[in-house]
Image 1 (cartoon, rainbow, N blue to C red):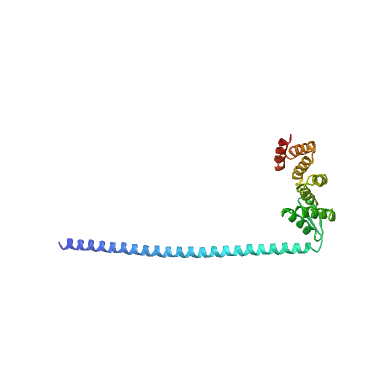
Image 2: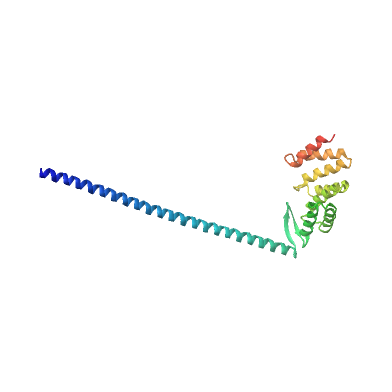
Length: 221
């Protein structure tokens, strides 16, 4: 009986100790998990802060780059007002004289604002003053469009034919030919207009100019 009682007491003691050990272990694991979670949360916070700093530095870098670009563009513009520069405009290279770009820009602004007479006069003055300008094809193009808008079909035809003859590979030629065809049509030369429209469709089939020319051909009886 004594032995049995001793064994029961020992078994009971062992179970209590085991339970306590398990509870302690669970408590220890819970504490460890809380500590790990706290560390993870801290790392996430630090990571977010670092990401924010990186983004801020990137933004500062972009601002600096943009500022430098603006500075050099302004500097380039200012220098262009005092000395000739060699540039390429829509595939045409040449030397731009001081004040030349401003003269072209002012003429274009007049056209865009609907001040067609001023635009026409300004482009005429530009082509006379800067006959070798890399802006000349564009000046002829807009001059022709200004004349057409002012109902000067003969003048538009002359300007646009000059552009096409002197710069046959210029990217503005297809659009210039559409205005040329319209000028020919409105001046009463229907045969010349139809020929111009047909040439656009044949030479520049995948352009907006060709689509316009096709519609104009269909409408020209």
